[in-house]
Amino acid sequence: MKAAVLVEPGRIEIREVADPEPGPGEVLISVEGVGICGSDHSVFSGKWAAPEYPWIMGHEAFGVIEAVGEGVSDARIGERVVIEPNVACFECEQCRMGRTSACTGRQSVGMNRPGALAERLAISERFAWKAPDVGEDDLVCVEPTTVAMAGLRRLGDRALDRRVLVVGVGALGLMVVMALKEHGSDVAALDINAERLAMAQELGAGPVFEDERFDTVIDTVGSPGSVTEGFEHLAVGGTLMFLGLDNRPMPLDAQSVVRRQAKITGSLTYDHPGDFEHALELIGEGLNPGRVVTDRHPLGEAQRAFESVGSARGKTWIRVREG
Image (cartoon, rainbow, N blue to C red; front, side, top):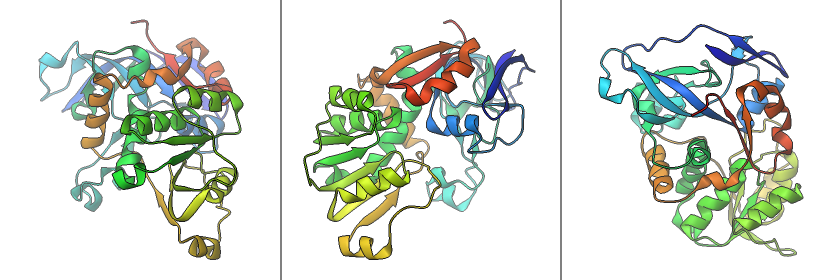
């Protein structure tokens, strides 16, 4: 099968690789499309080292089941599905507590197990969700929408009933804006990219007024600059949530946090199965996250797609097969 293979940081080649075989309890998926997110780009750039080279990236995938492994009903063959790419062990303490996002044995497609930027992918059937009857742009956005919705769930309704600031409106930030608007929140947005900020405003985000403070700030970047900006706009007693995975030191000191009486929290992916199920339900009912998609590339342009994703106005995805 064909795959977009990362042969070294910053360089992708389209190669023929061995087809995967579905094991017991698994399904084999003919991959149709894969989104690119910040984590993927970090692997591409070498900021996060791939487990090995060559490496297949990508995890925000959808496609059609073409074969099943032992123990899986043949009735699933031909079913269009969306991949939940964080495969939990269900055995560790965190999994037993229902916090699969913190699973100590988690296998993440494209991160520590081969990714979806290939014509076929094998995965446990419980992580291949039947797709709602929506467009491809919506399907490629299911996984990041789940990330956004899980973050809001963890904040709780009380935090969202007030005016909320979203710092960073790349693809994930745009989905956070949409999720907040779906909740009914009054949303404001900040970004250094004027085009992305304009897109957030098209989705319903308002401007930030001079010296305005917010009880809830959601930082989707986590960079030193975004942390400084977000904390500057945080009200006394407010909550600052991080969704971004930047690993540089935060420019915060204990005195500032204490004097602001701030609550600092983070939200990592989502918990199986409730969060994914909830996002799929909302998308099936018309949430339409595909509104944030602005760039689409064929598999043969994977190199170009990854090189340009940082400057894209919205979400970028790669079509693996023609549907």
